[in-house]
Length: 337
Image (cartoon, rainbow, N blue to C red; front, side, top):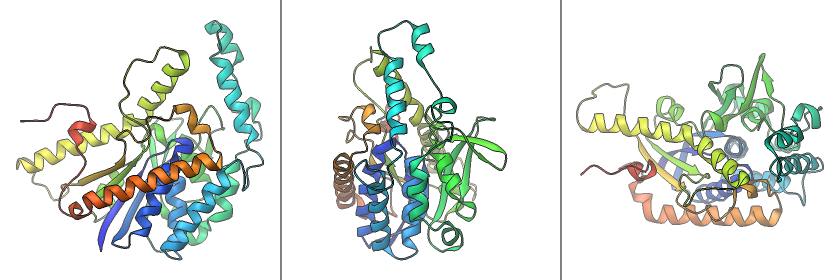
């Protein structure tokens, strides 16, 4: 059995792609999971899976299915999903043909249109995860990313403190939900500061193999010209920025170690791998991240399963031996000769 860490990116309903990838990973009993980091939808996937693993791999797969079934419009605790519809309608109104001033005037905030801060995902999560058992139980280390609104810095919550509030903080888009206050500090979506965070896996686990499940495309052809397309591309760049920064740092450290310049036991050569991020989701417009119909989520799940199984078939033997992620290509920079 080979040990791996998992780093799960967030991206709205596109997190169902990661659900499919996790389903395939859990199905493969040659793999043992030591640590999981996640942001936003990635944090939800991580916590639901870890909760299920307390009862076994099949239970983890079942819980992930139940979670995403609950997210869907056609079933589960989705009665308050119209809040999402209200926000999407507001977003579209902002980008209707109008002056910048008119668009700004049409904008609203969750403190106005969602004064009670209703979030149906919290109920779905709380119904599936026994957080007391999760905090006290065995299994993979958990690292959930959120962004401190006051300081702008990233925060990573560990397994032993997790509550539904910590996970919801990681998934709190500021245009849709009010900031989640934890110990007097307000938090927004973890995707702004660590999507997903890699450094806890590097420094707080013994495993040197990290599989990144990437949802947000790094590169897109062409230049966006419409207001919506521009906004969507800005969001993609923003939610990939922290991951690219960590990949640059890991690449730099790896080169120093390989060249014999860095000889310090605090630093180690990480073996990085990636499922997704290679065009699998580029055909889906960013607006589809708000599509929570069961048929669409199943489609993404199947795509994620296919990607993960294909990756495992190609690269399983490399786990524990070498990286399979082309960091130079991921960073869009020329390879050294």
